[in-house]
Amino acid sequence: MLFIDYSSAFNTIVPSKLVIKLETLGLDPALCNWVLDFLTGRPQVVRVGNNISTPLILNTGAPQGCVLSPLLYSLFTHDCVATHASNSIIKFADDTTVVGLITNNDETAYREEVRALGVWCWENNLTLNVNKTKEMIVDFRKQQREHPPIHIDGTVVERVVRFKFLGAHITDKLNWSTHTDSIVKKAQQRLFNLRRLKKFGLSPKALTNFYRCTIESILSGCITAWYGNCSAHNRKALQRVVRSAQRITGGKLPALQDTYTTRCHRKAIKIIKDNNHPSHCLFTPLSSRRRGQYRCIKAGTRETEKQLLSQGHQTVKQPPLTLSGCCQHTDSTPATLIMGIDGK
Image (cartoon, rainbow, N blue to C red):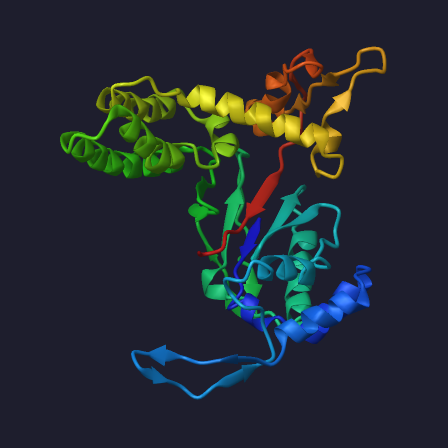
């Protein structure tokens, strides 16, 4: 995977190109003209104290902080798609991830995908920030080989073994020790504030609210993505923080395992009800006679079995949604996954 970072992505949107893409998507011409008028001829000034600079008229980019800007950027980049079946391009706002599955040591499709992405960026006035673009290789084979570095605009992309992406620390071993160590350390720092508030005489209810807002939010961030594959040691470390907070607040707090199960269940229900969700097809009904029962996902590894979608199948117990069977393991051919992570 190659997680791309753009230089001032929102500020480089060309309104005229955006409008053409909006028209291609079938938006009403009046709405397209409104968007074009909104993005062009925008006066901006800089104020320092009582001093105000000369106004500057901007005709490119989308205003940062505007609720419409992320949507416009997503529509602007909707045509940035993978050209090879073995690759995927995953986008979240201005974070773009190139995922390449390498089999038989053939990296041709992956490298062509990176080159094609560079061409697309040039055509759409987006500048790749190579210094903040990182690459990570995930290879569990016993006999590993050297992988030539990726070059973008003549610059070598740095290769890393761990990186923080969208709030989660990812490693080339795909374990979550680094992530759990980080959030445990941060949560313990917040426990100090919780103890101080108790000394100030705050009520148990106020202490619990503080815990849920400032500590539980850290422990449960992206929990459906990583908690299922945590080791027993990591889970004990996380739960120790919860027990410490419980002693301070004086009331019972939900265990992280319960929080994880609840959120997996909630996510599974949401996916099943949304026919347009990319993962909706993974929840396959068994038959018309067994209404509300879904076929479990076949997992090739223990790690896959513990991921969100597999856990979601196991936690969907709310009538009329039930499960039949359990996750099954299938043999899979070892493959190399090349990962790159942006440097935000």
